[in-house]
Length: 137
Image (tube, rainbow, N blue to C red; front, side):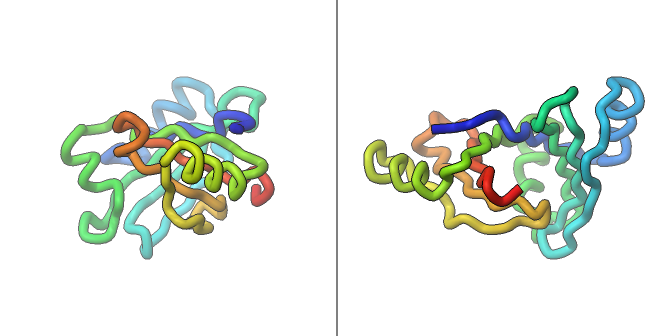
């Protein structure tokens, strides 16, 4: 069903401080750094070793727009979700919904340029899970 861990999303109040930690002190390589005014966030994706897996840094820049600001205010800097790469994402979403009653958001292409869907946390024991379309990377 899932092909690999695509990324782990970590919400922080300061992207530059997070980059200093993970890039300069822990040796992770930035894959992509971007901002989305529309989404109200600044982002960075850092490659984990020699894999196709990433640590995604999310820093809310506009609390009124960001889907992640409330998480940061409630939990402080912390993991928001784990994303799985799935080369058959649409089929997997249909199976999860039809056979297991686990719905997801309608797939979108986010500012990361990844095609994603968040699974319903009410059905995933409260754990934030996301699917990333492996065919859209």
